[in-house]
Length: 128
Length: 141
Image 1 (cartoon, rainbow over the protein chains, first blue to last red):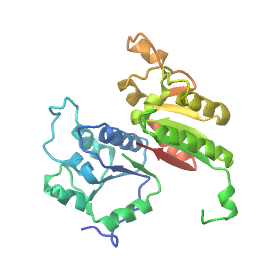
Image 2: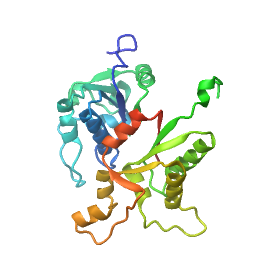
Image 3: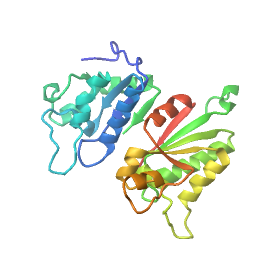
């Protein structure tokens, strides 16, 4: 578990906080789009997944019955864009019955105190 | 307001990121009111970036009743008074039917509803605005 003592919170240019599930709204898609564009412009981007945003990382997603393209192709592109810092709220994950093994990519779990610390340390933050 | 150092009176350049559609949510009107308040304090909104459902703020066809404030007129007035760039994410806009003349022609559409001073632009401009202004504030529903 990464904690407030050992996290390197401040080495990013931009923190994008994602709080919505893949389907049902455009928040996740449009938040990820900003992250990818910023990375393409050479910014060091970190992502933070909170609340239903943790569903963004679930393995086995498909373009679903809702007729939406889904966001898993964007998640799959993160590594190519050098977006490797994926901070996940441990509380949000557990509340939804998920474990890190259920996710598409390796992530760093953070407790709520460390999430707050990370947010404070990153002055450039966008919330989706 | 806890700090009263001289530095707090330095004029700052602001970017506003607007995610809220006009009239459906308070976000866009709050952004406009904030922009006016900034000017009164000697600051300047250099850029307004419309994203997510906020792109609807750019529609020339917005027709509120006469006894209601016109957000379209408000944004234009902001541009006239502060020279604020009014930037609209082109990808978010096209999906939602916000097209300027060039995009309307390119997509074979019968009408355009985005006119200067609103500009369709890419998300790179939002990233630029974040890092080139003193502050960026988000107004979301």
